[in-house]
Image (cartoon, rainbow, N blue to C red; front, side):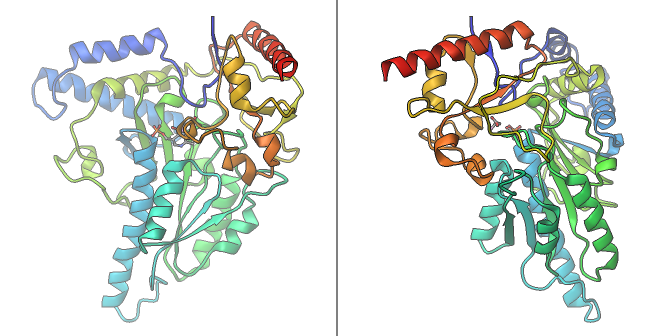
Length: 394
Ligand SMILES: Cc1ncc(COP(=O)(O)O)c(C=O)c1O
Ligand SMILES: O=C(O)CC[SeH]
């Protein structure tokens, strides 16, 4: 029987979460905006879930905007930053004395190892001439974005810095709190527009402690299906529309205080709220200790406790070949959304300084609450036998 070790791609639902979803489907099918019992039940579930999600990220219920997932949440942040810049630019043009730096195009700073749902909208804005973007390369020594490099990239027209809290392939945790501290000091000295701060916490939530207020971010992306919740997301915004701008990408029936209209997906919201309320994700899991070539171990960097990106070195041991030959292990060579990359080495690993031939042999093993010590032992044995077989036949 197969052993799943691709929890960074997605995670399974526990029975109690499926039950919460099923009950919402059965008993709270009403439109949450309807003023009768079926609607009221749905509205109550959404309100309770919002409080549970807020508690999980150290925010307040009004700071939580439900979205379809992490991709929507990340796109909403980038679109908001551009619109925020434009609105201030128009204000400055009307008020000649206003020198808020909003001249030319908005400038966004991000890293070169972000998930595609940050990388591609940023590239799209750049290609369409709607924003300037600096993709700050991570250090090839630490696989982390260096704080000084982020600070050095700031321009008068910088309006957003977006750096993921933990990378989905390497598990490396980024210095988001330090970046926010430095930028908040900078914001106090700047006459120009305040620089907004975002972190995509998709891979960190459920694995390490995440507190939006301690991090100091204005926005924090939440992705349910990375921590045993269903396929739904949310965006934490520190005082949406008040302390922090939030410009809707969609327009419609006024739900989510007009920030994200559309009749709410009550069952999925119920499932997300259930996981956040019960802390289902906080069971111990094992880190693989087998020593091969670690692609996610950098002496001065922290990494997620569940992620192990390793390469088994050898000319016939490409990651895809090893995985397709394993009899029990289910894992990936990198991000699931790059699975059609025709076995090219991960650009994330190459950006982190992993040599091409090593990156080509990468296996991303991400364990989860369902992983047992016996699973780890079995996977190590599966890999050992597979490597032996591949080296014999080639
Ligand atoms: C780091 C990261 N950000 C964003 C996403 C996108 O989330 P979603 O799949 O809900 O769109 C994912 C995973 O899919 C991810 O790993
Ligand atoms: O597999 C991952 O890293 C997330 C989905 Se692209």
